[in-house]
Amino acid sequence: MLTEVIHRIGLLNNMPETPRPKYSSRNIFLSTLVLLSAYFIYDAFEKEKNIPLGALPIEVPTLAYGVALDTFITKKDTVQKNQFIADIFLANKVSYNKMTNILAKGKDVFDVRGLRSGKPYVFLYKDTVSAPEYFVYDASPYKYYLFDLKKDTIAEIRRPIEKVIKTGSGVIESSLWNAFVDNDLNPEIAVKMEEAFAWSLSLQHLQKGDRFKLIFEEEIIEGKSVGIGKLYGAVLENSGNHYYAFNFRTKKYAGFFDEEGRPMEKQFLKSPVEYARISSRYNPRRFHPIDRRVKAHRGTDYAAPKGTPIRAVANGVVTRASYTSGNGNYVKIRHDKTYDTQYLHMQRFAKGISRGAQVKQGQTIGYVGKTGKATGPHVCFRFWKNNRQVDHLKLNFPPADPMPDDELPAFMVVKDSLMQILETIPSGDKMMIEEKATDPVASL
Image 1 (cartoon, one colour):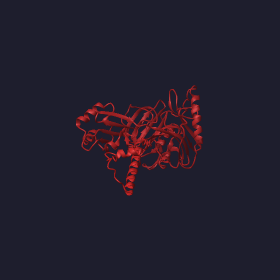
Image 2 (cartoon, one colour):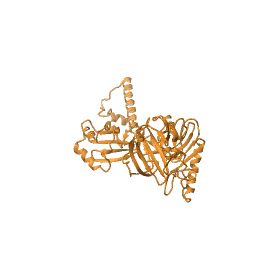
Image 3 (tube, one colour):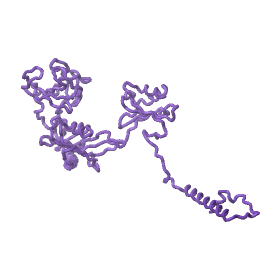
Image 4 (tube, one colour):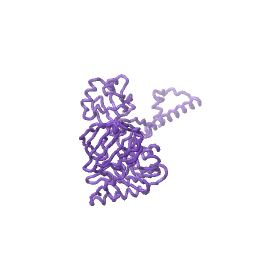
C-alpha cells in the first residue's frame, strides 16, 4: 500500500539508481514524515470516495404548485379591483398572442370572468430577461389554476384535503355565533348548526346559560384549517329541553333527523333571517314608537344589520313585491291554501323577485333595511293562517313523517353511535374543541 502511495505522488518515478546518495538522519526523518503524510492523505481520499450517498447533506427544493420554486424567479401579487387578466398578463411580459392563444385553448378549464379581486397570483421566470414560464392563479384554499406558458395549457389543480373529526361543547353567553367568534373559532360551525336546527328551533331563542355539544369535520389543507365539512351530530339544551340533530342519508333524503328518525326539515323555517335578534314580538296592544300610540303589532320584528339576506320560510309564489309608506319595500308569499307570509321594510328586493315568481324555502327574497315606518334596520315578519294574522312563534306544526321502516334500523345504529359520543363530550363552562383519534362515523 505504501509503495502504491509513493508511486501515486511520483516519488519513485525517475529515481536515479546510481550513484546511491548518502542521507543524514535528519533527511531520513523528513522523508519518512512526507511518506506518512502522503499515506494518510491517500487513505482519507479512499474513504471519502466510499461515503454513502445518504450521509451527504441534501438540499430539499421548495415545492409549490407542482414545481420547484428554487429554480425560478417568482413575482407575487394580488388581483386589484376592476383588473382583468389581460392587464395582468400584458404587464408581466406575456405577449398578446400568447395570452389569447392560451385563454382560447383553456376556456373550458378557466373562465376569465371568474377572476376575483384580492386573490393572489404568481409568475415564475427563469431569468430577469425572458418571459414567464408559468402563471398561477390561487382561486381558493381548495384549488388553483396552473398556466403553462410554454405549452399553452391551463390545468385546474385541487389541493388534497385532510378531514379531521372533532367534538366541541360550549355555553351560550349572548348568541351561538358569538360563542364561536369570541373564542377565535370558525363561526362556520354555527352556520352548520343553523342549517340543522332551522326548522325545529330558532337560534335567536337561545338564552344565556343554554348549552350545546357537537361532532363535526374540519378540513385541513397543507397544515392549515380551511373550513368546516360535515356536521355529524349535535344537541342543543334550551330552557331544559334537549334538541338533537343527526346527519344521515336515506334512499330519498339526505339531511338531519331527530332522535326518532323524523326529518328535521319541516314546511316552515322558524325565522326569515339567520342570527337576527327579536326586537319586538307579536303584540295586539303594542305602543307604536313612531305613531306614539297603542297600535296592534301583528308581526315579529327581527333586527339585523342593513343588507342582511331575508329568506323565504317556505316554498311558494310571490303575490306582492311592492312599496307602501308604512310597510316600505315588502314581499308577500302564498304558500298554500292555508298559509301566507309577509316581509316588511326591505332595503331592496333580491334579483328575480316580483309578482308571480316561484320561490324555494331558504331562498333570498330581499335584504334587511328600514324603509317605510321603521326606526332601524329590521324585517317585520307577518304570518297568515286562513287569512288571519297570527303569532307564528306559537304555532305547532305537525311533525314530519318518520323514515321508512326498512331504513330505520340502520339509522338507529348511527344515531346510537353519535349519541354515545355526544354523551361523553365534557360539558364545561368554557368552549371546548377536541380532536378525535379515530373517525367514529366513517360509514356516514
